[in-house]
Image 1 (tube, rainbow, N blue to C red):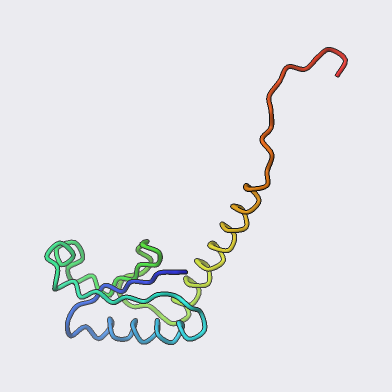
Image 2 (spheres, rainbow, N blue to C red; image 1 turned 135 degrees about the vertical axis):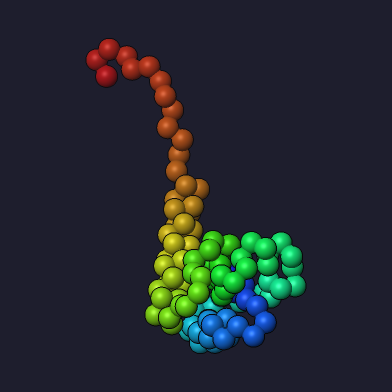
Length: 108
């Protein structure tokens, strides 16, 4: 399942907007949603400062600042397709027979 984390601060209007967008998209496409207030962690506050909201999708920073619903939706769909593709490739690898390297005989 896709994991979405929104890094926010107190009294951040854009953070509230991105959270509402995520909740709307989540109604159609399931993913886990976590909101983290960076003011509660000195390391995060130092790293991100006023550059909020920051949206991480599967632990990858995908957006910061203003995000539209269309942008967010496309990023979730892209991540979802990537996950499906990875699972399909993994299933093919399970059935793939190892290729043995050998010497060819003359006339083969």
